[in-house]
Image 1 (cartoon, rainbow, N blue to C red):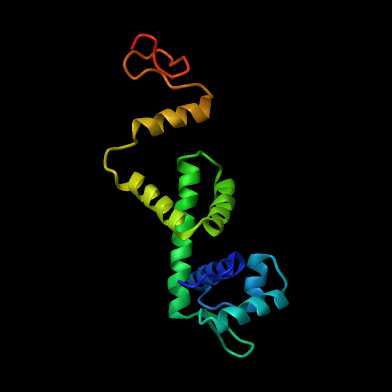
Image 2: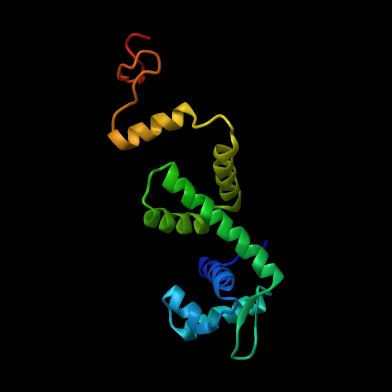
Length: 166
């Protein structure tokens, strides 16, 4: 897979999302969504055209090539899974989860990203409900306290985090 800059990946994702909701994407649409000026969009789109990720009519609509759409789908899926992890596992707000998902998705290695996504999928399809350690972690995040002992309900204490009775 071609290595693109974080900015170029953001453009592909934005084009993908705009195509899904509006069917056509213009330079001014991208500039508005990404918070940049039109000349900046033109420069990035030029590089994406040269790399075979987008097509553009002369001063016209922008569309993803098959290659660009495949990469954009992959990037959006990974970002969505990371956002879900940050919201549901780490209990971040949706806005904070989104910002972090975009950042992490760009700056980890492909192998790390693949493993992270696999871990998230594993948690979704495990079929055993929420694992105890995850419930314990959520309790700790919410309260700052170790979770109660699974056997007797006493709070865990000591350096090893064990119940004094067990």
